[in-house]
Length: 114
Length: 113
Image (cartoon, rainbow over all chains, first blue to last red; front, side):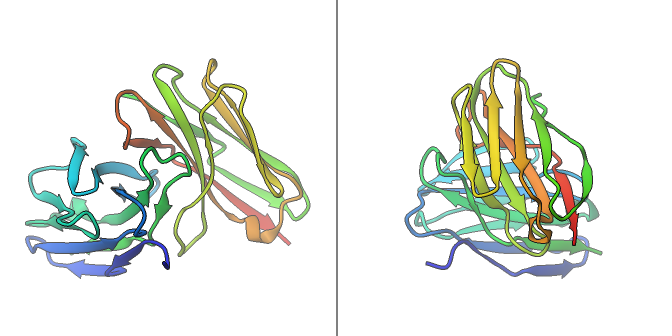
């Protein structure tokens, strides 16, 4: 297992387009998290899954954002009708339930909306 | 709204200096405090997860302490090396959520050779 993988690493899109990001967690980890980081801020929680169940969503996650983890393995995060304010680094992480050993993060997807 | 404060925002030290950072957080409903190191162009890397008041953890030259009653954690680096240059993030697990870590803005450390 090579850790948490995110694809793509970079995405430039025009305002109003839809984008989808993928995250492949560590296979033994049943929890998967999505965070967003903007310049000068710490990562902000978006949502998390335990297996295939989405257990919590942040108020930051507007109805233009949707996340899935259909088989409890990889996850996708889709942003519809992108806005310039969506430009950020989108980080995925995974952990064993409870996160007692910490989260393992991917390298992130940097989204730029022009 | 829970807020996690880190200080200083940035720190420049010489190789060999020892340094420490502070993470402050509201002490109510605490269940865990995480420290991560994030080097440029890499993934955030977990350093410590601390859950008990008075906890002290160590990994090589890096150590951390936790005071949940007064709501702070210190991260110490002994004999800083250029490869320690990174942003150090602390994150609070609190309240009813088991998945929502609240991150501080980080302390950016630069170690000059």
